Image 1 (cartoon, rainbow, N blue to C red):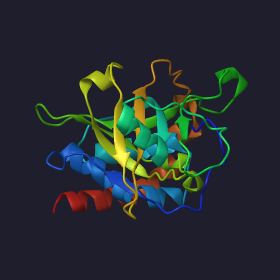
Image 2 (cartoon, rainbow, N blue to C red; image 1 turned 120 degrees about the vertical axis):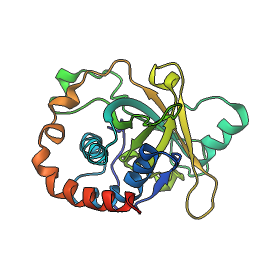
Image 3 (cartoon, rainbow, N blue to C red; image 1 turned 180 degrees about the vertical axis):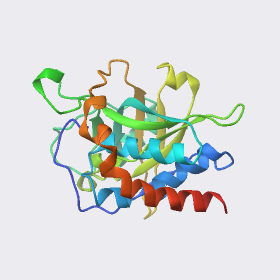
Length: 236
């Protein structure tokens, strides 16, 4: 869940599929970000990371790929911040309350919750961010992370352009010992934004109690239709 700001529902649906396509897990991960986000937005709000993860786990499993939810923290950085990072190597920090200037560095945290986050103070709300991990299905292959709900943090007025993303992640990342990141070049060829991921070591697993995780019946028609398309495409 994004830690600040109003959610946008009027933005184009973008996809950044960057997993290797030579494994089944990679092909499934890339397919999910290319094809699952837009129909999902017809049923759920943009910040429904729990429902997005449930859908990805269901579809990956149907395709014969082991998958599980992965609690995360993320920082999404606009063009100016990304340019500073590529020059200095210093990871960005979120500064959501900076006055609006699309050319100024700006970043937003996802999955950090409010500064004094306490699950008891926010009943029914998850103070984190959830994505789907597709386990490697071949020796020496990397796991694939799929985040369908990253675009909840998009702020085009600040030159922060985001979409669903898939990316390979290392064992070190999964052990909490490194950061995973991906540059996100917009379709118009402008300078890229970036997203940085950390495994959340303090996740309280309250997402397991969410209706979006428990109510699989609500997703059944959507998942069934997407599963048929996915399996058909994998046969090609």
